[in-house]
Structures are given as C-alpha cells and as structure tokens.
Amino acid sequence: MKTGFLRAMIACYYDILGVSKTASQEEIKGAFRRLALRWHPDRNPGGAEAAETFRRIRRAYEVLSDPEKRRRYDLRRGIAGLDHGNGGSTFQWTHEMCGAVSEALHDILGIHPQGAYPERKVDLRFDLEVTLETLLVGAKEEIRFERVRYCPECRGNGHSRRNGSSTCGRCQGSGEILEEQTLTVTIPPGCTHQSRLRIPGAGDHLHPQAPPGDLVIVCHLLELRDA
Image (cartoon, rainbow, N blue to C red; front, side, top):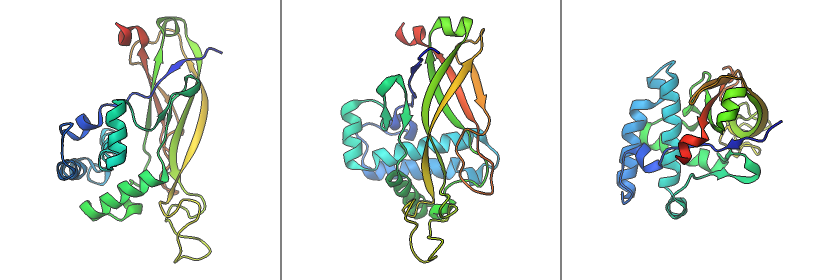
C-alpha cells in the first residue's frame, strides 16, 4: 500500500466570510450573520452545497471570532486545526469549537444549539493530493480524518440520560462528539484532477434519526499545485 500525500485544503477564513484581514469583531460577526442566514441548511432543505458552505462558514467564524485563535491563524497563514503528522490530515473539530459556534447561532439566529445542524445526512469533503502516477495507474491510499457525530451517551440532546437537568459528561452539552477515522481508499486507474470518490456512510452523523452522510474524496494533482 502506498502512502499518499494528504492535506485537507480549506479556503482562507477571511475569504470565506468575505472580510478583510483587518476586519473588526463586529464586521466578522455581521458577515457571519448575513452568510448564516443565507446558507443555513434549515433554509435550504436538501441542499448539499448549502450544507457544505454552512460548514465552512461555521469553521471560519469559530477561528476569527476568537482573538487568540485568530492571532495564531494569522501567524501561520495556514489552515487552522490540522495535524500534518505522518503524512496525514486530521480536521480537529473540538467540543469548544462546537460550543462556540452553537452559541453564536443561538444569539444571532435564535436557533437552539442542538438545532444548529440539520436532521438529515451531511456529506463530509476530504481533499486528497496524489501524484500523476496514482491517477494513471491507481493505488491504495490510507487517509485519517475526524467526523462529527451525535453523542451516543445523550443521543444528541446534550443532557445526561441519568439526570435530564444536568449536562452530558461525555459531550459537555454540545450533543456531539468527534470520531477519528482511518480508511484505506482505492483510487481506480484513469482518474483525473478533481475526480471525486464517494464513500457511503463515512461522513458526519448529526442526528440519531438521520442517516450518516457520505465521505466525498476529491483528488488533486500534486504537480498542478507545485507548478
């Protein structure tokens, strides 16, 4: 099995929110509010593009609305929350991040934190960098990623099942946990730049009454990045 060149490529957070790199916190919050109102999945039923766009908006706002995280992000000018060890990519969506964004959604949109996610399947995208040889002849690539799923302890409602008035100890009230996943993916021969591979059921699983989303792997040719 070959070890692939893996990196989850995420657009600049400032570009996602449509603000300048010197934007104030009020400008960032205002941009998030406008975009969240437009792209929230509850306003775009069944829209896969809206769900993915909303995911990126949440991610950008969580970093840029926190002065310390924003400072670190600006210093790196890289992708926040990624671990590039062992040639792999892992998106780190923490309980703290879930809580911060849920609170913002509640304050701005009047949505309860547990209503911040749609009760339907949500696909998860993974960008995979591969060589031209891999695209031409195929290969097996091992990828590491984290997906969000509802907390099995509280069934996603954030409250202890033993005492409904207390916060769930496992998810700390967010209703969600992270699951680290490792998959071996077969890249078939004859793929091209930006070919997409779909792994059913490997995406986010946000509600016990909804099916898990799919993992969508997008192949990117390394030679184009380095050109």
